[in-house]
Image (cartoon, rainbow, N blue to C red):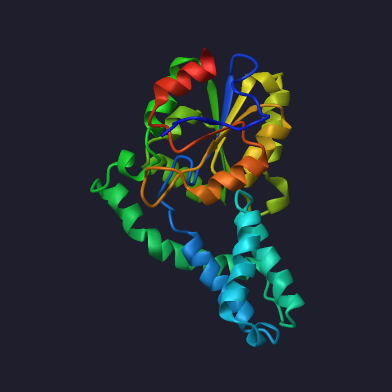
Length: 273
């Protein structure tokens, strides 16, 4: 199996020497929240099924509607998916709740699912490499040795990102540059972080690389002129390509597709020559 897939018509390597790298967190490095879609999709489906229009539709049809907009907004702050749910409830003839209420209930359900993983990391019964995308530490070490400054951005609430990055022992690579969702959600986006980073450091797009498994971060890197590495990680199996992710990442503007970071030598050769 080919480890690195170059997307036809896109860059086959960075145009310059990478100086800065931007990482998504969940699904790109961390697997603590693996399976979050299995929490959000059924919950959102429940809410839509409780509307006048939803009661007249097959569950599978409502589920597909939810999965489609959840997918489209993956990588943005969770609140945006909840805002969209409120809009759909209204369109289905229901009375929408405040989006924050939807978010709070989703997080309550998710935190029940991942509680054992968090406790395992806290108690030392789970090793960080066992709950990260394969090769994450080797890649971070390689980029650090190359003098690349690294930023971590996430649509997950910042307090949780900071805690989980610390539990995984990856926070040290980012030297204070870890950014997550804010209560005032309009003040944060991955795009804003990238724009500020480039402005503050007088970066050219050719000096930027980005790693992500979601549509939003790859689109942001591509728009900034950087080299976009689509990580089509199979989170459940921790090996191989997730074909659904691959399609979305290519549409978003990924230059190359990889399953994980297991062949860091080949990645290093491609990125740095």
